[in-house]
Image (cartoon, helix red, strand yellow):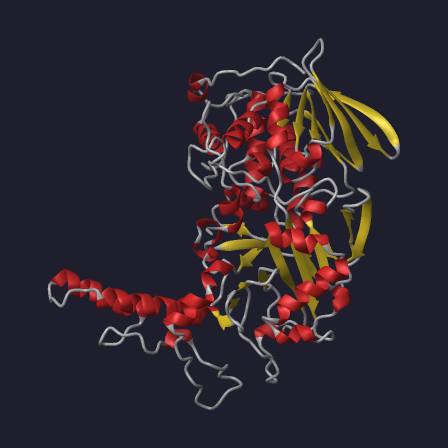
Length: 558
């Protein structure tokens, strides 16, 4: 191993950087607060092009492609080595004919799990599925590269919630409004029986906030809708009676991520690319190639060497059954850290080795279904059990955790649903099952929300698709599982923000960003590394950095 180095932070160098670079630097080290992106608008780089200097980029995920594009535009000679036969990393959209593979836990071999059998034109995002309005880098690349966007609906009042201690699913509007009404009524009871102006204003606030009656009681709220869909019910539909305070509390509904849409990362407005999330990586790859980058698919990196008589890096990789070598002045690694652990390394510091040993990736699974009838929207022939759902998410305490409804192609004949998106123990259990057993378990959870899932002609079993990201080769997880309360994570996060070999080897990706699990984080990291290579921002960071809270940033408050 090389001699361990702990370079000092250089605030003077940072003060000379453009404001955009300073903002990104502060966001990357966590000084700008959780979920900050460091975005300050269009960038201007006060540096001449670096014609011909070679950069090896390992991995064609979102960060790798972004780095390839940005550095190629600056004149660097970029080659991207990607182990898979496709670009995008965890940005993956399932379409008809796509073959999915996972690592068999017993043998360690990569096995074919199944082939997507969606109808032509149907698709489902197996990785990222939405773009917050404040992820300005992603939105800017989409605009610049002509990737058409449409709204992604995070929540509707018609979505369902199946609490852990309830035998039925309730509409979102009943749970949200009845909870608000009961809490407002209880607060109103605590007000003093005075008639001063302030107390009167509070009383009026609670009346409107909770839909209370003139006596400050919560008895009936039109906000909660009807017990049955007016389209298929009586001529004069019955208002939904309030769920009691006891019912709501005993149900534990808030433990189903019911309030996730209130967290900053999921607040409206959100977007999605028209035609699938992979439209973004396809555009990035195209633009990187146009800028001069070479992207080599099916190139598995086996060894990385830094140091020697001159600054630089040497990489061994396998491509087309041949063992090949490549060298460059700089190396940017977008390889997921769990995969990087299995790659040979020479010349790396002890601190770096300790850092990658610390980092783990979260287990996460997704299941997708093609439905031959969009029953969740409501059948006008009166056959749907629940209707009026146009996008959004239903939450459940079942292993599947959540069901996403499509935010596109409304009123069409068919649609695809995200039938499971889970984490931790739920993902570990679902991912441990054979493919068909995963679909069986996911269908059981879906039936608890929509009885239509009992009918194979409506939701065909053979058109289900499932992926366990922690078993996908060259990925081995959903995102870096950072825990801000642990000193070892602080040390590892700080170390990985700094290059190895002085200025030779850089780690990039959402895995080393303030936004783990988000494409914006990947692009932030790529931009940060590009500016480090250019010397625009310091290659060192302070002794104390803010480690991102991966759970809060990917799953919301718990």
